[in-house]
Image (cartoon, rainbow, N blue to C red):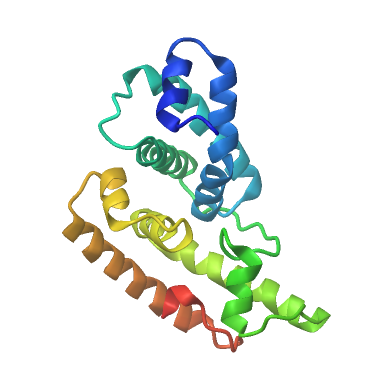
Length: 202
C-alpha cells in the first residue's frame, strides 16, 4: 500500500528525500497539466512545474494540514501560475500536441461523437479544434482561466476550489458561472470553421 500524503509530508519534514520524490511522481502530471493549460506552452509548463515543486519543498515546514495536501498543492501551483503571467506581461505562446484537456483524446472523441481512430483529415481538424480550445482559454482573464482549469479539466469539487482560492462556495459558483459564459462567448465567436462543440461551451 502506498503511503498517504500526510505520511509523506511527515517524512519529508524529517529529511526523507525519497518521500519527496514519491510525492513529486504522484502529482507531477496534475501540476504540469494546470501549468500547461494556464500558460499554453509546454516549455513554460515544464519550467513552472519544477518551480512549483521547489516552492512546495521550501514551504512544507509551514504546512499544518488545515486543508488537504492536494488543495494546498493546487494553491501553490495557482500562485506560481499567476506569478509567471505577471512576470511575462504578455499573452502566453500557444504550443500544440494532440490533446485538448488532461483527458485529451477521450474528450475530443466525445466532442466529435466517435469512438474509432480518426482519419488523417479528421486528425488535422482535431488539431485545429485543440488550438481553438486553448485560444479560448488564453483569451480569458487569468482568474477565469484558472477556475475553469481546476473545475473542468482537473475535476476539483467546489469545496476544493474554494480552498484553493480561499473564498466561499457561493463565490466559486458565481465565478465559475461567469467563466463558463465568457468561454462560451469566446468559443462561439471563434468556432465558425468548426462543426465540433466543446464540453466547456455547453
